[in-house]
Length: 480
Image (cartoon, rainbow, N blue to C red; front, top):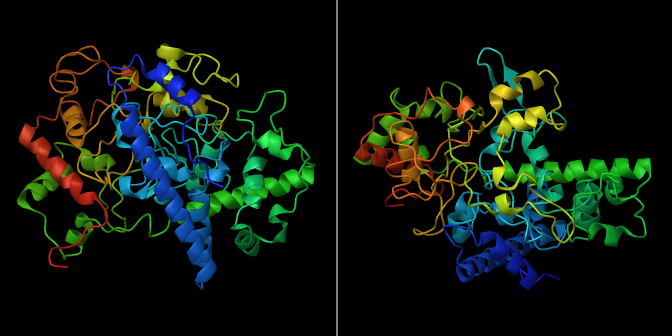
């Protein structure tokens, strides 16, 4: 049975308190309407996919992909049975955040515990399957690959950054908030796709003996207490089965995210490169600027070379010199919530250390990377700009960069162009993002070579924006 109310009155009140200090107040009725529409689409997609599984003859590849899709759209795999992976990654928004009002205000999205918000913007899953296992390129002096804004899903264990990324949100207390990986397996064992999973993975996939208190344990939001880090108490053998099945769940989700449904290479750009369409003069001017040495865009957002797919990212990380976005509710999450969890003890003084924070922390699996942590403070992974403008309607607002500080492609290009030219100002000052910029969060590692003073005119900025819009999948050539 599906929950009919996405937010309880208590959760709404909690969110209201956190948003009271925002300069861009959230219009609750607009957000609720959008959220309900997204939830209906999630339900519709899940039902449609389940029907396909039941009534179509599928080959092995299709089975794995559709199982991954069912898992991706399954709200039962969150502590409150109210949030699927897809809630933050819908196709109509380029597999990024699908709620315009949240993008405009909070930038980050609420988790299954609705008063908890993440500290970063949902990152697109589109074309993420091409990211290699994280490694250090000594000649470049750079880390390459991985997943998440801070690269912490290295791919070293499962040989797939995207699969390891899929294991993050279900256990993240600010996202799906399950208390134990075994809870994901337990919840999946009761879903309609169980027989399909057993067919693909073997009869042992859900053969563990669950403790008597499994339901109560898995209904408690994470994180797990330090004194009991695996609160689903299983025998060592059953724990091994549960972990193996959790890995298979992640690999299935990654198979869906790596499918042609997610990565279709069907933008106007692709048609132009195939000789089946032409850029407008304005778009072509933007493309030439994008590829020019004057803008450096193509150095990080690579459009491919010999033997390369045009993925529009080099899978490295950079500190663009963005100011913090104190409009994110995460900055107010400095007190214990109803479950005793404090998401951000630092409160308003929090600084997002990005890749450097991952390298300094316990999740870093490679001790050789640790000494490089300081040079990566404030750096975040370079996203693809494919589908960077994909939106369900013209007035839909998107949130750009890891903290959602920028709200339009014009603002993004203007920031790259003028970051070091325009004067500094306080957040909320008149002219912010147009004639002045607030100070960067981490100036010590800021990229000063490839952006900040590009010398572009406003028209040239607009031309680059016009080109970026040609990267939206689903293009239909004129006359087709």
